[in-house]
Image 1 (spheres, each protein chain N blue to C red):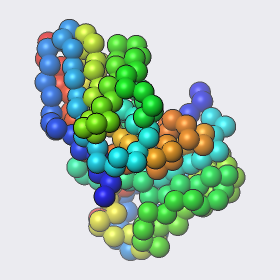
Image 2: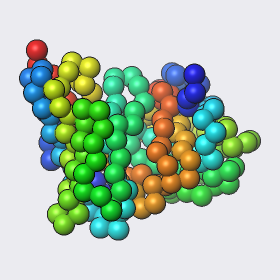
Image 3: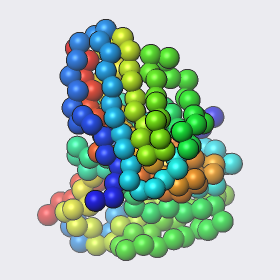
Length: 111
Length: 111
């Protein structure tokens, strides 16, 4: 069935360190993956996406890695800042229309 | 500002009442969605409309009726509200097969 899960529900990192948020997905037919950031009281905000024909994509301070062999997705945030505190969601879909979300990881930044 | 907007932000009502949530996007997207986020932060798609036509209905009770008067608007009407309907409802939009952008959410509390 469709499910997207996360290895850890919470993650605490020191300010300035790199953060790695992991995600496992189960639908091998998924061809599109996306990460969202959700701050308290707000809607999910797009961070970065990747299609299944790629294994890495970089944005500003963020990198998404896709390992289709083990159906694993990760989000790396470089030099984590206090403003990065949020819940992070991975999502998958076939054709980018119907996103299936994971449960979310709460990222906390320690000063 | 170009965005997905929805009203109201908060909705508190009694069981059995009927209520509506309105959504508008000025991004020029042709696909709009309703997602539900439960108390554990789990996000799940409810409906998807493409150019005013329903394309996804995720076995949502028929008490929930989406209406799309034009491709920039997708409203959600809920009849006979139940306690279990309490959640945050997010409207979203995208171009076909593009990134999904979310609105700020409507927190519905059924008493």
